[in-house]
Length: 409
Ligand code: EPS
Image 1 (cartoon, helix red, strand yellow):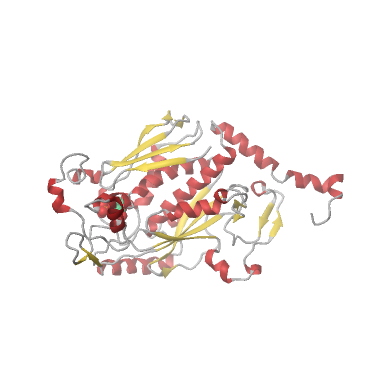
Image 2 (cartoon, protein in one colour):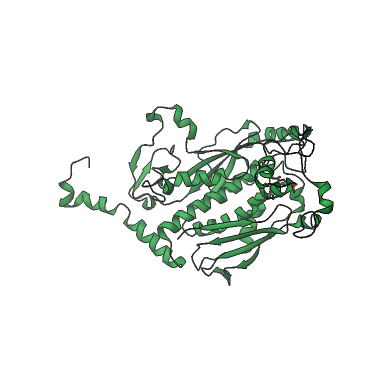
């Protein structure tokens, strides 16, 4: 079984549609639970006027009865409140007529506009930007929240925080609070280091005045993930690759690091790899623990049972209020790029989106390993695995078979 999902919908169309398949029957979930995550995604200092218009809430279309999944595909709708202002421009049918004069013809450097119109052979960059818009991430957060609900049943907690924004870095606060979001969600820029809150806000204000935009980095931490999700045996089963792939698909994301990430490349092995200790009562790690977690919870493409730690870097949004030079596609003359209402930064929101996508990858790996038709079946599979994790090695210690093994086997 796999967690499969698809999204549809334009930024200023009627709404966003999500279809999720693979969740077992019997998983309790409410619209309120999903709406809470959608609201979290809409927050953050530096967001634009659109977020004052929207109030994202889902409408279930299928897959649920009496508050529980029934095993069939789940579909849901997130209506766009802004649709009322765009009905004419975004009408599904009718002649282009008047729209010809309102075309987007000055592609923004850094945006999908130019490549999209050429590749798809369109005469209006709106046909591209509507789907390239980060509005689509609302749909992914909804899908990811269903995954998060499944993971909760198995004791997994996922949170995130901003580690840098507009070049202002937070100092690391270790150990990280748990649950992480209880602290980061209290901050308008989702930092847990309160001393940088003011400087980051100032940086955003400054960029806004200059008509500029800002990028930054976030960190996602997933705790309580059992050892052994993913696999070392084939490239497409390695969980680090699956995480990086999905996270890199967030609009404007340019980099993903796991654990120490790029810093690991600069250190000797003795300062990178996490020494192993025995910890008999730690069931989800098979009776072991790591003194450090530089690996970010993944070795050989498999979860170690330590927290999964992933950092994601986002470039500044490509819609600038002080637009960059481009070419007008109708005249082929130099022009200023299209400047639409947009955000100064969406880095705090990106953390919420990244959490949702990490949840999707983990739920997918859980379903692959323990999946069943019902939540009860999945639970039995999970607990059976956890109970037997490492048991053969424990038996070796006391059995005669064990004594025949070399001491370092
Ligand atoms: C976006 C532009 C802005 C953002 C939008 C992403 O929207 P608009 O063009 O309507 O002002 O607010 O993000 C969202 C709508 C959202 O829900 O996150 C873009 O061009 O990518």
